[in-house]
Image (cartoon, rainbow, N blue to C red; front, side, top):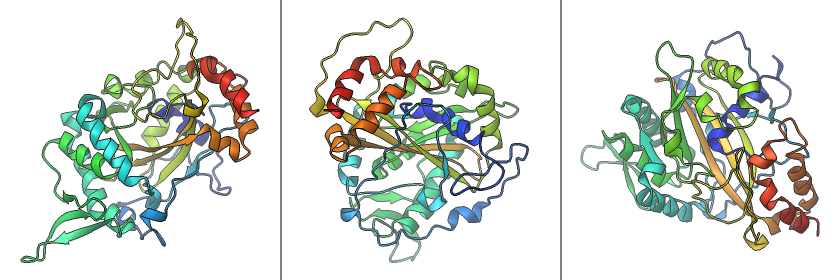
Length: 364
């Protein structure tokens, strides 16, 4: 699937909508008529250490989510809360890039409406005081003051950084601390009392894929997804209902995919075509083409009840996919973009620009 992070949010609902009210394997159970939360604050503290984890020896996840035909009803599985964040051996190089992009492009990578300060603080306190030191104790530990024996900071054992346990008053600085120590994007969705529409009111996002997040800042979901073919007709109302009924104590995850004709992670524009756009011929250098995937997680904070949409980006050289024997599978998936339920997705994702060159290589 080729949807970028913000424009992929609606796919979470499309799969939920078709699930039954019983479990089958790892499918998520959703009862449309119930808004009862099954989670509590205690669920979020039950985070065991990741078994046998070694940062230097942990390879990045190998995601291969492409299917023969594109349909909006993509598979979603339940995500145990301990698995909210993935770490791997690319951590040091990734956080260095994140710091660079936050310094060079602060308005694109960081935004926070004043109304979201409590949400930013809740996310920060949970991750620094509970999740990170419990899930990854070989990377993060609570450092105590030797005189008072009170907790003084969270120590990043990989970079040597000391992270305050009390969030800064400025929410931008708070989000920057998260973005400097976690290779994960965090988008915070909240709504006004009496409103049934969630809006993007805060984020740290260092690796955008074809959109300028600042231009989406403050928008409601229906407006964020406006350019996406098929969204308004198929999913707008249903997704709004799903977000409003999402429970605390539960997270869901999915993966998407796209084709990138370069290896850049920071791509705030240029990945999409819209109705009326002219298709410009582009020379595709296969040696630079990558399969770009996002592992996306959606969960609700228990106190402010804001929704967190987080994701991590993975890049795989096209040659690697071919070497794995998956060349024909990916080539079929590229054709399948225009053969599924929303054929316009193929044009929207610029398949008309890179499609033939990529398929030819994969099938050679």
